[in-house]
Length: 280
Image 1 (cartoon, rainbow, N blue to C red):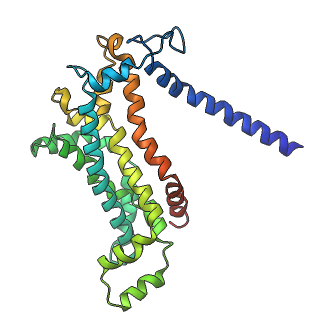
Image 2 (cartoon, rainbow, N blue to C red):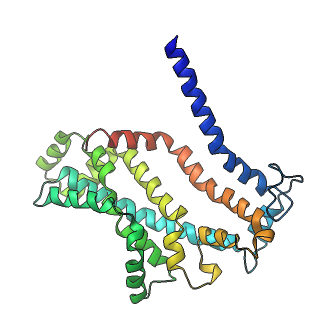
Image 3 (spheres, rainbow, N blue to C red):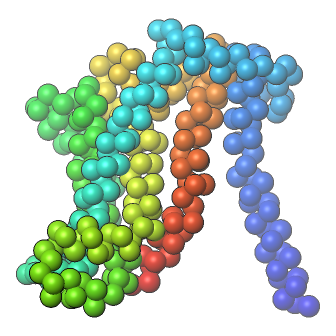
């Protein structure tokens, strides 16, 4: 009886927390379908429904709202950052898991310690380095920022690769395979869950980032902005009464690609996390 009561209270608590968590998401979605362009906090649901905000956002670009350009810029940065970051993470994870060399453990410990510090601590130094190289207000500069230190996040991938049988690699060594061939032909085909997890994680960072994008793309030319900068600009005091529903519509549209990617690959994503937690 006590166990049933505890389970009921536990489920009730989770339901309440889920309800609270869903309120702003639902409000964002329903507000994006409002016919009133500004913020209306007097009612939760709009008094009049319309898709005009989506139409204006996608097909009526102006000096403030250039969502198609922002989406294209963000997608470009996210795709290339994802490719480079995923390659770095998997290669570092393979080196630390499957290879033995001097300073291996000190390097692993150093990487873990560096990951304890937020990346934002380095953003001023990163900005001046990129400005010296002429890479500010440049999408490739953002790609370098997002992918440059990605290899430090190798730990979960290493945990998964630790579960790959050593005998398979040893058999490949006996057949004369090189490390590169073992990496691509033996280990990677058996590591699909952690590859999917790494790809999704690497894609989400540039897709959702605001701080680094705002610092590096600071020329004021709106056509160069990412989605996060462009949508944030719509919340300025002089613009919010005209563009707030477009801001909400943009928030909904931005969530669609990553939601589709997650739902399609959810099985592998969960397997990658749980597999990476087996061994450290």
